[in-house]
Amino acid sequence: MKIWLTLKESLTVIRVTRPEPTATNPRTAEIAQWTERDQIGRGAILSALSNTLFDVYCSDSYTVKSLWDELDQKYNTEEQGLKKYSVFKFMQYQMVEDKSVAEQTHEIIILEHALANAEMKLPKKFLVMSIVDKFLKSWENFGMTLKHHKERLSLDDLMIAIS
Image (cartoon, rainbow, N blue to C red; front, side, top):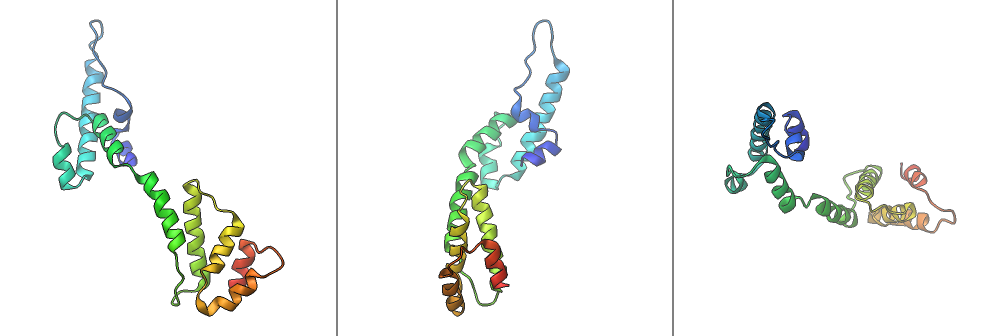
């Protein structure tokens, strides 16, 4: 949404309060420009809302900044949700027969990157052992061999072994 508002040149309205006129400087041009950007930004946000939310927030009493702040406070659980969702996806991931193990291992690594982006970096050894633990039943003996290896198994070694 912020990218869209930037394209509409309305992102600054979210960050800047309405200019106030003074007795010596009426600032009419600045106020007119701010009002126009406010209306464009408000329209952009409202057009992205569902019909139900639109009905709640379409009142003219909202500036784009107040609308943005209220929606952000009320509905922006993205970061919290991302963390929970990333952990859930990683923990619940199960390999399937109809895809290659290498491809599925790559998917698990992508999930690990999502965790790292959510500031939950996993130790590499934990990641490797998690991947081995998610192997299919048909790969069980291979997984046991890898687990009981004397040497420390790196992610690269694992990828080479399953390729």
